[in-house]
Amino acid sequence: MRIAMIGTGYVGLVSGACFADFGHDVACVDKDSSKIDALNDGRMPIWEPGLEGLVKANAERGRLTFTTDLAEGVRGAEAVFIAVGTPARRGDGHADLTFVFAAVRELAKALESPAVVITKSTVPVGTGDEIARILKQEGAPAGTSVASNPEFLREGAAIADFKHPDRIVVGAEDEQAREVLREIYRPLFLNKAPILFTGRRTAELTKYAANAFLATKISFINEIADLCEAVGADVQEVARGIGLDNRIGPKFLHPGPGYGGSCFPKDTLALLQTAEQAGVDQRIVRTVVEVNDARKLGMAARVADALGGSVKGKRIGVLGLAFKPNTDDMRDAPSIPLVNALIEQGAEVTAFDPAAMDQAAGVFEGINFVRDAYSVADDADVLVVITEWDEFRGLDLDKLAARMRGRSIVDLRNVYDREEAERAGFDYRGLGRPVGPATAVRAAAE
Ligand code: UGA
Image 1 (tube, rainbow, N blue to C red):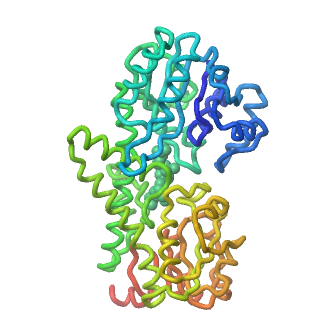
Image 2 (cartoon, rainbow, N blue to C red):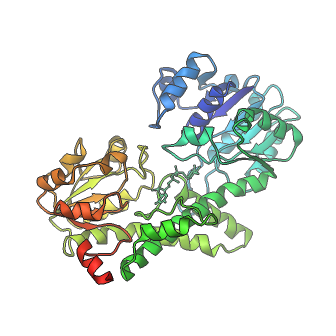
Image 3 (spheres, helix red, strand yellow):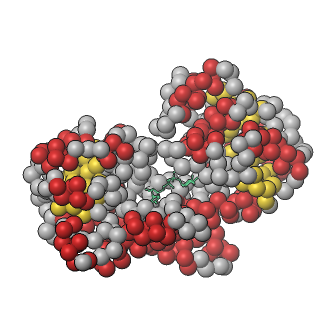
């Protein structure tokens, strides 16, 4: 099938490359000519494991093309996906649909024959209706229909998520749209991925509800982690104890410094906006947002605690800056409020991230970047793990300790084993684990 993908951001590029890999003929369109030039040269605008190889292989086979010319990209397409950005509007948290509607207007004029227009961008409930109205008003060919097909990819695991989804959600109001989407995703039915057909508004809301629920799980376990610290329990065991219950499930129960990224913070706020407009209070999601904001702001105090109450004049080594591992994405990363607070309070911060250093350089002022994890430890008073990159898990703790002037680790992702860290001479502080040396904790429990 001939598919056009408008927007070569994260979602558009991954989806376009994966559709091409299914054997479809995909044209990716973006207004940003430097991005399109780079893609035509085989250079990726984002850092995502496996993406470069997938793009190159499909481009070489002629199934994946890149253009800045929307009319050329959509020529002959039976399906046109809209995957442009929907940033949170400054001030009120509304999803900003300027790019979506601009693309739709241009599309309406460019289409020469009817197509199914499908939103992949996360858009508020009712956006599909508005797109249908604009297409009609701007003279799109009769028979053009509008569907919603939200994506559930995680950064860092996007290709695997795309090819092995838990489910595919399609919101459509007519049989033609359902038929086209069934055909596009047919290669995945062979792997038995369930495809769920719903109304358009239901699909739009499903995306927000999914992200809000996952954000709720994270805020829930973060609060339970605080309680564990206060009562001498271990949150990892609690998470395992509840997660083995199939009704709860083990995923997204890892405590951390608060969720970040381009999706949860933005989508929870947009859900609240939708609810407010509809006059329906969403107390749980509102609280989840509050808990997460407070969580991010509370992390600097943990570092201060480890240093006896103040970070002033202290050297702090930071491991990981990206909002999560396997990405260079710094959007809404918990490292931002944390590192900024440490600097404001007079600390000297040195950091390393395996992928996000370039992005981070544009975000922070006054921090030192080093080129490897061990150098972060040089003369540091404390090490703070903010992102759980795999390469940090296997670091030699004795080697780190030998390069430091202090002996503290604040492990905001629970990547280290406390007893092992203590054997290397560290004062170890994880999240949601009993506070104090392991031996003392064991004695208190006996
Ligand atoms: C999220 C969803 O997981 C995807 O299903 C969805 O498609 C995507 O948003 C989107 O809407 O586009 P993503 O933002 O890439 O994906 O990353 P996640 O793996 O969900 O992590 C989000 C944040 O939650 C990170 O800061 C991560 O560290 C944090 N997190 C996640 C925790 O603190 N604990 C956990 O147990 C899981």
